[in-house]
Length: 259
Image (cartoon, rainbow, N blue to C red; front, side, top):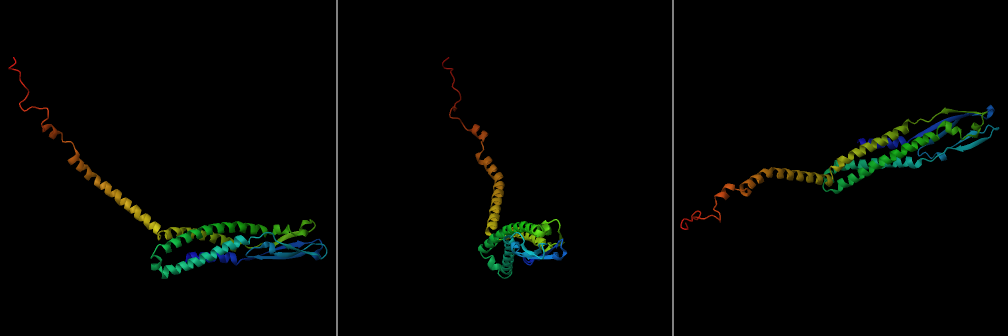
């Protein structure tokens, strides 16, 4: 259940976010001033579509401006991975509980589970990294100081511009943390899923067979040595006791008659 909960927290904190910032434009002509310009933005952070109006400090004229940047691809990618990871983990939980015997009946189920777990681990790492980078860009694009640079009246030193309210980033920071936590959880599950596959069982049988073969060879070595000593060793005494083809039965010849 931890995987499902962490996935929910990840896409909920990112997909459900909405923020607001406020800036002020204090014109030299006080009648044209606007001391609370509210700018609202939200997921999926297409900031180039977020508009607001600011006074130009020239009579009652106003201008319509847009924020800079489109970070929807990274945000939507992160949320999509979180949603699919939640759905898959939910289905996998049902299979583990209700169809465990059928799951282990052949090697296809564990292999599919292993491959999907590896893919989701990699996707969590990529999407979390991409979203962390995009979040830093969102913070920069919605910084009140950066927004003031877009307003024409703020470029005139006779007018005063300031920050009234900054966005709150705790929710989005939490989404990044949960993204990397999901990566750690899914990467940790790779080993447990791999243990159910035929690859791990085959490797375990191979290691056990090799160990038994090594132990059997070591135990047979003294027996073979004894057999060599009994049958293949050289019996020197026996060889000396046997008569040689060059020895004569009557001993060495005498030459007494010749004398």
